[in-house]
Image 1 (spheres, rainbow, N blue to C red):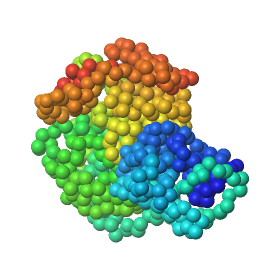
Image 2: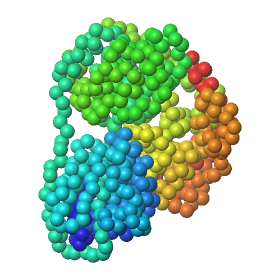
Image 3: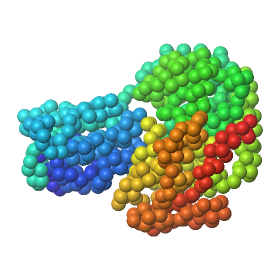
Image 4: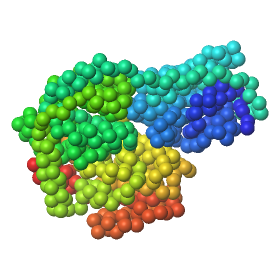
Length: 555
């Protein structure tokens, strides 16, 4: 075991270890040498070296997403730190705990024209739970311990990103065998479930007197709700439960394809669907159609269940219930009474009609994005982790019912296409089941440095739907009428992932029609010694017509 001679480095590494923060993603640099020495000198840490800081941050996000505990990021001074920002924003809105440890030059070298310096303190001000600014020198030990303990405890208890800026003067590479300090580990603050009895009683009153109740779930980690709770909700005939691809909640009486249900409705149908009571929980909701519906046809009362926050997404929020959904329903359901209603059954009939038309439509359409996604979701093996990129991928995913054995994840905090591949690779590294990542071409090429990574699991599979540009823009009203649409919106290209696959040691397969796709899929998911890429080329000129016609067809 070895330590940096820098007392500040010793303090950081010791407190991280004490608090169970043992996965460290390091990007190479000189100013962060003391931190790198400290972490890599202790075999209790799992260290990862990733050159591109943007990819490193999303890789760490994937690790933390699966580990359900903080992962630390270590970078050198200057613009390196700024490359973390997209992942920090995603972590902030997705409640993923990250600890950013940025090395900095000492204060007297800042803002004097010295190289590789920027204003690092508080640089993530609007998207961080805590900004810690340490000081160099023995006389500041008590202050530094407080800053570090506070930051790490907040990351753990409030589940989000924190930043600690750490100044180091030269020399940077000195090593010692015995540490000079043994910092006090202040206990992490454990978030307690609030006593919500009065608020729960208020919701029960509305619930028990309403024949039209709706629950809408956003992003939710697998197994967030007990099976008994799911069963009770499914048995309530006065309740419609809408779930999303990322909700990881399943029951035959629930409604997993929201857009499929809502898009074809007319005004009278919307009025019939309008709930009196709305309960929401989980993270960001993908469906624009459900947002518009609930804004245009608001419920009488709306309660959001979340241990941290409640966004007024539908402009009708009544109150925030600050606890976990599982905790809430355990207390709540025992107080509720059954209400005689045909609300659920009426909409289940509509759901079944939509599914029948859905199957008929798939039999009629040519090879396209829509038919490809249908084939993929039919063919994916059971018991996998399914990572989805944003834009077209997650929106097509909303139209299909997921295999209940899949754990589904997508970076919906900021909904950006950046970092999806890096996140999936990080998640796959610590996931006990095989990971399949489905992405679009722009998202894949945007994050192509994600493949510059020596920690990619051999059973990791990437499926790229390459429609030669940002096809999602084609379905937006009047978008194609804008001058230079293909260049500045759709961004047409002729790129392929084949050369990237070869460069980074991935196996590569491709398909551009349904018979070839089915043949490739038959072998793609078999065990292999290297990670694999399947690139599917679809015709960009018909994809939007097939998708838009779908909603007319299923009416």
